[in-house]
Length: 323
Ligand code: ATP
Image 1: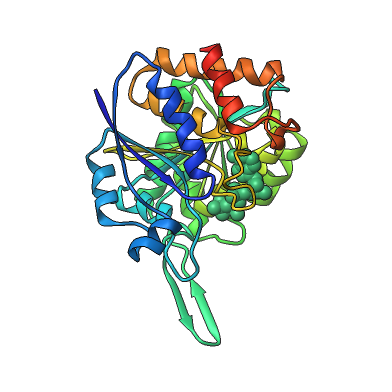
Image 2 (image 1 turned 90 degrees about the vertical axis):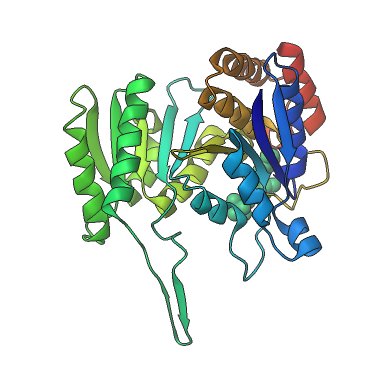
Protein backbone atom coordinates (compact mmCIF):
# COMPACT_ATOMS: atom_id res chain seq x y z
CA UNK A 1 0.00 0.00 0.00
CA UNK A 2 1.40 3.41 -0.99
CA UNK A 3 0.76 6.46 1.14
CA UNK A 4 -0.17 9.40 -1.08
CA UNK A 5 -0.73 12.96 0.14
CA UNK A 6 -3.43 14.59 -1.99
CA UNK A 7 -3.53 18.40 -2.13
CA UNK A 8 -6.50 19.48 -4.27
CA UNK A 9 -5.74 23.21 -3.66
CA UNK A 10 -8.39 25.52 -5.10
CA UNK A 11 -9.92 26.68 -8.39
CA UNK A 12 -10.00 23.84 -10.91
CA UNK A 13 -7.44 22.02 -8.73
CA UNK A 14 -10.23 20.40 -6.72
CA UNK A 15 -12.07 19.27 -9.87
CA UNK A 16 -9.11 17.77 -11.72
CA UNK A 17 -7.75 16.03 -8.61
CA UNK A 18 -11.09 14.31 -8.11
CA UNK A 19 -10.83 12.83 -11.62
CA UNK A 20 -7.28 11.59 -11.05
CA UNK A 21 -8.13 9.99 -7.70
CA UNK A 22 -11.21 8.33 -9.23
CA UNK A 23 -8.94 6.72 -11.82
CA UNK A 24 -6.27 5.66 -9.31
CA UNK A 25 -8.97 4.03 -7.17
CA UNK A 26 -9.87 1.62 -9.96
CA UNK A 27 -6.33 0.21 -10.22
CA UNK A 28 -5.16 -3.05 -8.64
CA UNK A 29 -2.59 -1.18 -6.56
CA UNK A 30 -4.06 0.14 -3.33
CA UNK A 31 -3.35 3.64 -2.06
CA UNK A 32 -3.79 5.29 1.30
CA UNK A 33 -4.89 8.82 0.29
CA UNK A 34 -4.27 11.51 2.92
CA UNK A 35 -5.96 14.81 2.02
CA UNK A 36 -4.21 18.05 2.98
CA UNK A 37 -4.91 21.77 2.53
CA UNK A 38 -3.01 24.47 0.63
CA UNK A 39 -3.84 27.51 -1.46
CA UNK A 40 -6.25 30.39 -1.37
CA UNK A 41 -9.26 28.74 0.28
CA UNK A 42 -6.90 27.40 2.93
CA UNK A 43 -5.46 30.91 3.46
CA UNK A 44 -8.95 32.40 3.85
CA UNK A 45 -9.83 29.67 6.37
CA UNK A 46 -6.69 29.36 8.46
CA UNK A 47 -4.40 32.32 7.65
CA UNK A 48 -1.72 30.38 5.79
CA UNK A 49 -1.61 29.04 2.25
CA UNK A 50 0.66 26.18 3.26
CA UNK A 51 0.13 24.68 6.75
CA UNK A 52 3.10 22.87 8.29
CA UNK A 53 0.97 19.68 8.56
CA UNK A 54 0.72 19.67 4.77
CA UNK A 55 4.49 19.91 4.34
CA UNK A 56 5.04 17.17 6.94
CA UNK A 57 2.50 14.88 5.31
CA UNK A 58 4.27 15.24 1.93
CA UNK A 59 7.60 14.55 3.58
CA UNK A 60 6.49 11.21 5.03
CA UNK A 61 4.39 10.04 2.06
CA UNK A 62 5.61 7.93 -0.83
CA UNK A 63 4.44 10.69 -3.17
CA UNK A 64 2.13 13.71 -3.40
CA UNK A 65 -0.56 14.49 -5.94
CA UNK A 66 -1.16 18.24 -6.24
CA UNK A 67 -4.01 20.04 -8.05
CA UNK A 68 -3.47 23.78 -8.36
CA UNK A 69 -3.45 26.85 -6.13
CA UNK A 70 -4.35 30.47 -6.79
CA UNK A 71 -1.58 32.92 -5.96
CA UNK A 72 -2.27 35.42 -3.18
CA UNK A 73 -0.73 38.92 -3.39
CA UNK A 74 2.16 39.41 -0.92
CA UNK A 75 2.17 35.70 0.01
CA UNK A 76 4.91 33.28 -0.96
CA UNK A 77 3.71 30.75 -3.53
CA UNK A 78 2.58 27.53 -1.82
CA UNK A 79 3.89 25.28 -4.57
CA UNK A 80 7.26 27.04 -4.83
CA UNK A 81 7.67 26.76 -1.03
CA UNK A 82 6.68 23.10 -1.10
CA UNK A 83 9.21 22.32 -3.83
CA UNK A 84 11.92 24.04 -1.79
CA UNK A 85 10.94 22.51 1.59
CA UNK A 86 10.99 19.01 0.09
CA UNK A 87 14.08 19.77 -2.02
CA UNK A 88 12.31 18.68 -5.18
CA UNK A 89 15.04 19.94 -7.45
CA UNK A 90 13.82 18.35 -10.68
CA UNK A 91 10.79 19.56 -12.59
CA UNK A 92 10.15 17.09 -15.37
CA UNK A 93 7.64 18.08 -18.03
CA UNK A 94 6.98 15.65 -20.89
CA UNK A 95 5.62 17.47 -23.94
CA UNK A 96 3.83 15.33 -26.45
CA UNK A 97 1.62 16.09 -29.42
CA UNK A 98 -1.06 13.50 -30.10
CA UNK A 99 -1.48 14.87 -33.64
CA UNK A 100 2.15 15.02 -34.73
CA UNK A 101 3.95 11.95 -33.41
CA UNK A 102 7.40 13.48 -33.95
CA UNK A 103 6.76 16.25 -31.39
CA UNK A 104 7.71 14.42 -28.24
CA UNK A 105 10.29 15.89 -25.89
CA UNK A 106 10.82 16.50 -22.19
CA UNK A 107 11.76 19.72 -20.44
CA UNK A 108 13.91 19.13 -17.35
CA UNK A 109 13.73 22.36 -15.39
CA UNK A 110 15.88 23.17 -12.36
CA UNK A 111 13.36 23.64 -9.59
CA UNK A 112 15.11 24.92 -6.49
CA UNK A 113 17.15 28.02 -7.31
CA UNK A 114 17.54 30.52 -10.19
CA UNK A 115 15.22 33.52 -10.09
CA UNK A 116 12.73 31.56 -7.97
CA UNK A 117 15.17 31.31 -5.05
CA UNK A 118 12.91 33.78 -3.27
CA UNK A 119 15.57 36.46 -2.76
CA UNK A 120 13.85 39.78 -3.45
CA UNK A 121 14.60 43.12 -1.87
CA UNK A 122 12.49 46.23 -1.89
CA UNK A 123 14.63 49.35 -1.44
CA UNK A 124 11.88 51.75 -2.43
CA UNK A 125 13.15 53.18 -5.67
CA UNK A 126 15.27 50.13 -6.43
CA UNK A 127 13.94 46.59 -6.22
CA UNK A 128 16.26 43.65 -6.68
CA UNK A 129 15.66 39.96 -7.38
CA UNK A 130 18.71 37.73 -7.01
CA UNK A 131 19.27 34.87 -9.42
CA UNK A 132 21.02 32.16 -7.44
CA UNK A 133 22.89 29.49 -9.40
CA UNK A 134 25.13 26.95 -7.65
CA UNK A 135 27.54 24.31 -8.97
CA UNK A 136 25.70 21.67 -6.98
CA UNK A 137 22.34 22.83 -8.35
CA UNK A 138 23.61 22.70 -11.94
CA UNK A 139 25.34 19.39 -11.48
CA UNK A 140 22.39 17.49 -10.04
CA UNK A 141 19.85 18.73 -12.59
CA UNK A 142 22.14 18.17 -15.57
CA UNK A 143 23.08 14.67 -14.37
CA UNK A 144 19.38 13.94 -13.94
CA UNK A 145 18.73 15.08 -17.54
CA UNK A 146 21.40 12.76 -18.97
CA UNK A 147 20.28 9.84 -16.80
CA UNK A 148 16.70 10.47 -17.91
CA UNK A 149 17.82 10.52 -21.57
CA UNK A 150 19.58 7.19 -21.06
CA UNK A 151 16.61 5.59 -19.32
CA UNK A 152 14.11 6.75 -21.94
CA UNK A 153 16.32 6.10 -24.99
CA UNK A 154 16.58 9.74 -26.02
CA UNK A 155 19.45 10.56 -28.32
CA UNK A 156 20.12 14.21 -27.46
CA UNK A 157 20.15 16.58 -24.48
CA UNK A 158 20.00 20.31 -25.25
CA UNK A 159 20.97 22.91 -22.65
CA UNK A 160 19.13 26.22 -22.83
CA UNK A 161 20.66 29.32 -21.19
CA UNK A 162 21.69 32.92 -21.77
CA UNK A 163 25.43 32.69 -21.08
CA UNK A 164 26.21 35.58 -23.47
CA UNK A 165 24.34 38.04 -21.24
CA UNK A 166 24.69 36.22 -17.91
CA UNK A 167 28.27 34.93 -18.25
CA UNK A 168 28.71 34.15 -14.55
CA UNK A 169 25.50 32.36 -13.57
CA UNK A 170 24.70 30.83 -16.94
CA UNK A 171 28.43 30.36 -17.58
CA UNK A 172 28.44 27.88 -14.68
CA UNK A 173 25.36 26.18 -16.09
CA UNK A 174 26.82 25.83 -19.59
CA UNK A 175 30.29 24.69 -18.45
CA UNK A 176 28.82 22.14 -16.04
CA UNK A 177 26.62 20.86 -18.86
CA UNK A 178 29.56 20.12 -21.16
CA UNK A 179 31.65 18.67 -18.32
CA UNK A 180 28.90 16.22 -17.43
CA UNK A 181 28.21 15.45 -21.11
CA UNK A 182 31.73 13.94 -21.27
CA UNK A 183 30.49 11.02 -19.20
CA UNK A 184 27.58 10.35 -21.59
CA UNK A 185 29.31 9.87 -24.96
CA UNK A 186 26.36 7.81 -26.26
CA UNK A 187 24.09 10.87 -26.03
CA UNK A 188 24.47 13.96 -28.24
CA UNK A 189 24.75 17.26 -26.40
CA UNK A 190 24.23 20.78 -27.68
CA UNK A 191 23.06 24.15 -26.39
CA UNK A 192 20.98 27.12 -27.49
CA UNK A 193 20.34 30.52 -26.02
CA UNK A 194 16.95 30.62 -24.34
CA UNK A 195 15.52 33.08 -26.89
CA UNK A 196 16.61 30.85 -29.78
CA UNK A 197 15.14 27.82 -27.98
CA UNK A 198 11.84 29.69 -27.70
CA UNK A 199 11.84 30.29 -31.46
CA UNK A 200 12.88 26.74 -32.36
CA UNK A 201 10.12 25.31 -30.17
CA UNK A 202 7.77 26.85 -32.72
CA UNK A 203 9.77 26.37 -35.95
CA UNK A 204 11.28 22.90 -35.34
CA UNK A 205 9.76 21.34 -32.20
CA UNK A 206 10.49 17.85 -33.53
CA UNK A 207 14.24 18.55 -33.13
CA UNK A 208 14.12 18.45 -29.35
CA UNK A 209 14.48 15.31 -27.24
CA UNK A 210 15.43 16.50 -23.76
CA UNK A 211 15.87 20.17 -22.85
CA UNK A 212 17.60 21.03 -19.58
CA UNK A 213 17.37 24.57 -18.28
CA UNK A 214 17.21 26.83 -15.26
CA UNK A 215 14.09 27.59 -13.22
CA UNK A 216 12.43 30.64 -14.81
CA UNK A 217 13.45 29.71 -18.37
CA UNK A 218 11.96 26.24 -17.87
CA UNK A 219 8.72 27.67 -16.53
CA UNK A 220 8.27 29.89 -19.58
CA UNK A 221 9.33 27.25 -22.11
CA UNK A 222 6.81 24.76 -20.66
CA UNK A 223 3.85 27.08 -21.16
CA UNK A 224 5.08 27.83 -24.68
CA UNK A 225 5.33 24.09 -25.30
CA UNK A 226 1.73 23.75 -24.09
CA UNK A 227 0.75 26.10 -26.92
CA UNK A 228 2.72 24.01 -29.40
CA UNK A 229 0.86 20.81 -28.49
CA UNK A 230 -2.58 22.33 -28.07
CA UNK A 231 -3.59 22.98 -24.49
CA UNK A 232 -2.28 23.49 -20.99
CA UNK A 233 -4.94 20.97 -20.05
CA UNK A 234 -2.82 18.15 -21.53
CA UNK A 235 0.55 18.70 -19.83
CA UNK A 236 1.61 16.76 -16.73
CA UNK A 237 4.66 17.34 -14.56
CA UNK A 238 6.76 15.62 -11.94
CA UNK A 239 8.71 17.35 -9.16
CA UNK A 240 11.36 14.95 -7.96
CA UNK A 241 13.94 15.02 -5.18
CA UNK A 242 16.14 12.40 -3.55
CA UNK A 243 13.50 11.58 -0.90
CA UNK A 244 10.06 11.98 -2.49
CA UNK A 245 8.11 13.22 -5.52
CA UNK A 246 5.20 15.58 -6.12
CA UNK A 247 3.07 15.31 -9.25
CA UNK A 248 0.95 18.14 -10.64
CA UNK A 249 -0.51 19.50 -13.88
CA UNK A 250 1.52 22.27 -15.55
CA UNK A 251 -1.54 24.52 -15.54
CA UNK A 252 -2.64 26.74 -12.67
CA UNK A 253 -5.97 27.08 -10.86
CA UNK A 254 -7.68 28.73 -13.89
CA UNK A 255 -10.14 30.90 -11.89
CA UNK A 256 -11.90 31.84 -15.16
CA UNK A 257 -13.33 28.33 -15.54
CA UNK A 258 -13.31 27.12 -11.93
CA UNK A 259 -16.46 25.48 -10.55
CA UNK A 260 -17.97 25.04 -14.02
CA UNK A 261 -17.05 21.39 -14.61
CA UNK A 262 -15.23 22.58 -17.76
CA UNK A 263 -11.61 21.89 -16.83
CA UNK A 264 -9.67 19.32 -18.78
CA UNK A 265 -8.53 16.72 -16.20
CA UNK A 266 -6.06 15.03 -18.57
CA UNK A 267 -2.96 16.92 -17.35
CA UNK A 268 -3.66 15.76 -13.81
CA UNK A 269 -4.51 12.20 -14.85
CA UNK A 270 -1.22 12.03 -16.81
CA UNK A 271 0.55 13.46 -13.74
CA UNK A 272 -0.85 10.58 -11.70
CA UNK A 273 0.58 8.20 -14.36
CA UNK A 274 3.99 9.86 -13.88
CA UNK A 275 3.53 9.21 -10.17
CA UNK A 276 2.82 5.52 -10.87
CA UNK A 277 6.05 5.31 -12.92
CA UNK A 278 7.96 7.00 -10.09
CA UNK A 279 6.55 4.40 -7.67
CA UNK A 280 7.62 1.63 -10.05
CA UNK A 281 4.06 0.59 -11.01
CA UNK A 282 4.82 0.76 -14.72
CA UNK A 283 2.11 -1.53 -16.04
CA UNK A 284 -0.64 0.53 -14.44
CA UNK A 285 1.00 3.76 -15.61
CA UNK A 286 0.88 2.37 -19.13
CA UNK A 287 -2.78 1.42 -18.71
CA UNK A 288 -3.66 5.00 -17.77
CA UNK A 289 -1.47 6.55 -20.49
CA UNK A 290 -2.92 4.31 -23.18
CA UNK A 291 -6.50 5.02 -22.13
CA UNK A 292 -5.83 8.78 -22.28
CA UNK A 293 -4.19 8.42 -25.69
CA UNK A 294 -7.17 6.42 -27.01
CA UNK A 295 -9.66 9.04 -25.81
CA UNK A 296 -7.65 11.94 -27.28
CA UNK A 297 -7.04 10.22 -30.62
CA UNK A 298 -10.65 9.11 -30.94
CA UNK A 299 -11.62 12.76 -30.43
CA UNK A 300 -15.26 12.01 -29.55
CA UNK A 301 -15.09 13.37 -26.00
CA UNK A 302 -13.36 16.76 -25.69
CA UNK A 303 -13.43 19.61 -23.20
CA UNK A 304 -13.78 23.21 -24.51
CA UNK A 305 -10.01 23.88 -24.40
CA UNK A 306 -9.67 21.24 -27.15
CA UNK A 307 -12.62 22.55 -29.15
CA UNK A 308 -15.28 20.23 -27.73
CA UNK A 309 -18.24 20.74 -25.43
CA UNK A 310 -17.88 17.88 -22.97
CA UNK A 311 -17.22 18.40 -19.30
CA UNK A 312 -14.66 17.18 -16.77
CA UNK A 313 -16.80 14.20 -15.70
CA UNK A 314 -17.36 13.10 -19.32
CA UNK A 315 -13.62 12.90 -19.98
CA UNK A 316 -13.02 11.00 -16.74
CA UNK A 317 -15.75 8.50 -17.58
CA UNK A 318 -14.42 8.05 -21.14
CA UNK A 319 -10.92 7.31 -19.81
CA UNK A 320 -12.29 4.90 -17.20
CA UNK A 321 -14.22 3.06 -19.91
CA UNK A 322 -11.08 2.67 -22.03
CA UNK A 323 -9.21 1.30 -19.03
P1 ATP B 1 -0.22 29.85 -12.82
O1 ATP B 1 0.52 31.15 -12.86
O2 ATP B 1 -0.74 29.48 -11.47
O3 ATP B 1 0.50 28.74 -13.54
P2 ATP B 1 -1.68 30.86 -15.03
O4 ATP B 1 -1.98 32.28 -14.73
O5 ATP B 1 -0.53 30.52 -15.94
O6 ATP B 1 -1.54 30.07 -13.66
P3 ATP B 1 -3.68 28.98 -15.65
O7 ATP B 1 -4.47 28.88 -14.42
O8 ATP B 1 -2.75 27.86 -15.94
O9 ATP B 1 -2.96 30.36 -15.67
O10 ATP B 1 -4.65 29.20 -16.90
C1 ATP B 1 -4.23 29.81 -18.12
C2 ATP B 1 -5.35 29.65 -19.15
O11 ATP B 1 -5.45 28.29 -19.55
C3 ATP B 1 -6.72 30.04 -18.61
O12 ATP B 1 -7.47 30.69 -19.60
C4 ATP B 1 -7.36 28.73 -18.27
O13 ATP B 1 -8.76 28.74 -18.38
C5 ATP B 1 -6.74 27.75 -19.27
N1 ATP B 1 -6.56 26.44 -18.63
C6 ATP B 1 -5.64 26.13 -17.70
N2 ATP B 1 -5.78 24.85 -17.31
C7 ATP B 1 -6.83 24.34 -17.99
C8 ATP B 1 -7.48 23.07 -18.00
N3 ATP B 1 -7.09 22.04 -17.22
N4 ATP B 1 -8.54 22.91 -18.81
C9 ATP B 1 -8.96 23.90 -19.59
N5 ATP B 1 -8.38 25.13 -19.64
C10 ATP B 1 -7.33 25.36 -18.84
